[in-house]
Amino acid sequence: MFVDGLFTAFSVLAVLGALGLILFRHPMQGAMSLIVTIISLAGLYALLSAELIFVLQLIVYAGAIMSLILFIIMFLNIQTKDLPEEPARFYYFIGGIILLVPVASFLLKIVQSLPDAETTIVGNGFGGVKEVGMILFQDWLLPFEIVSILLLVALVGSVVLAGSKRRLSK
Amino acid sequence: MIQNYLILSIILFCLGILGVITRRNVFTVFMSIELMLNAANLAFLAFSRLHESMDGHVLAMMVMAVAAAEAALALAVVILLHKHKGKLDTNLFSLLKG
Image (cartoon, rainbow over all chains, first blue to last red; front, side, top):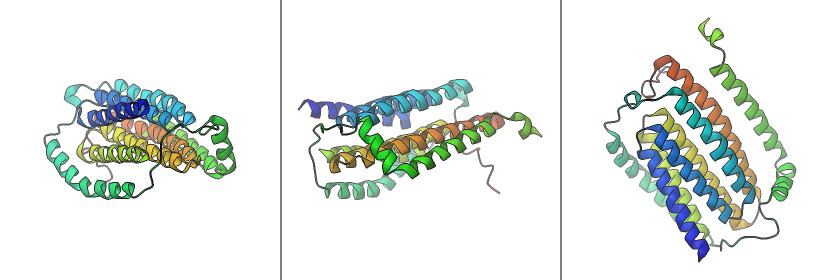
């Protein structure tokens, strides 16, 4: 019963944050709404007994990625007059909802055909650091290495894009 | 119960698509993509709980790494475009249009 209440609270907060993200005009307010969504999703991960991902969601997403986005938004010093005019936004919304209704109903049909399970907390260290690490470094070692190469490429790419003014102006 | 998590994931994913196709602000489009990645993570973890195997957790970690790389690159591109044009409108960024 308590878990059901927590699930309802977290999911309502997540949907409200997502709505705020796509409805607020200024990106700063949108980023704050996305932080609400991300933190409530972290709570949902804890309810799904994924301890490691819960902590990583808080540290990596809410801590690192969102603070990077907020830092860039504040760094560019966006005033309200710099924002793009979106006069036809609500027509786009109506068109997008019409476009998404068949997709969403198809996915809902698929979800309803799945077997259901209770979401009680699983014991035996399910989702803990040690267990996930064992699987990560045994079965998923090659994807892990590929992700490290991806991060290296992103690092070099962002340094090249944002750093060297000299080479771009030549 | 698991189905509720999957339905929430579908709702968040559709809201992310809606944000991408309706807004013209670069930051909002970018954060909508982050929202879609989060919805995919929620689906991964729900399926992982359904089958009681931890492969979904590993995949969620990979998605987080991809999101971090994407954030670094996309924000560098946004800073560069803002330096060139002084605007954040996606309609103005049409440098690749022949």
